[in-house]
Length: 366
Image 1 (cartoon, helix red, strand yellow):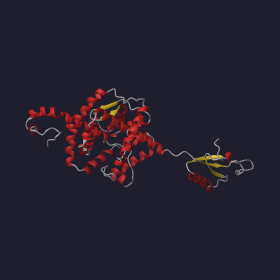
Image 2: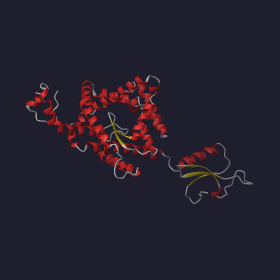
Image 3: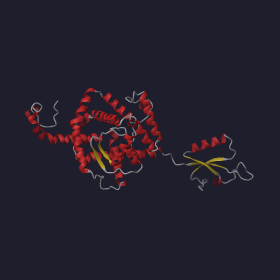
Image 4: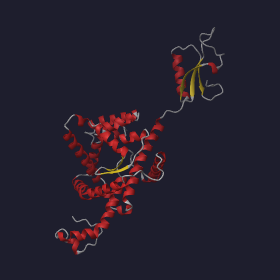
């Protein structure tokens, strides 16, 4: 079926499929409009690239965009790059971007269109969940590297549940029945989490936008795949390429209808793709740091004290000033402190015990 890219539908265009002599003229006439649509298409693709966060409703979108922009600005200030991004490879990156555009136009989009025509949306969503499910090793490993043990446990439990009850991950009973969410971290984020700079911006052939640090992270994540150590390299290479190809086609097929209004995003392509990618990564890093703060235990507010044993008072004395009592532990709430006090009394601690709020007149931090 001939796709109209906005060119006049004159007789020359109608005969294009039958008369190849008109191909050159049509390409020259239509190229500006086609290129503008391809630019917009790739910008949307980068912006819609799946991330660890769940998509928000329209009412919260403006707030999320503001958080992303703020995260990016803070990231730039910390890296000392106040004037913009580090992009010493811009000439090569721009050529790679043009290559990726042509690859999408002539290969990825046609294949994804055909794939979408023979599969339903639930099938494509299930394939996406299956591909995410088999990435469990880097997900769990990177959460462990970041000392996020609860998140690593959640990812591991999700893999076990979805691989069995979810039929190899095509369904997600871990979230639907058990409320377990995923935490898809990568080694590039782990390096950034520990303060490694993003490094120069890169546009990789086929793989798309990245940075030097993210490229190192991609190599590390691929090295975690145990299949590469169990089969010959060419089998592992073929399996990896096949998985990535299916992932790309499946994702592209799920977003075919979202580019019909792409003309609205017809902006400077290279800068727009760069902004979108770096803002997304800065936002992911900010979310990691925010989760770390949220998971930190509250500072202690109460202490459990015990009257010391004195000559003539082996079990302690209430007459001893409380600022001379022994400190047994710190607690975030009064209830936690009282629970520990009752536990010690129940096992027969003979010395007087009490809970004091830190900062109270009776409290003295020696």
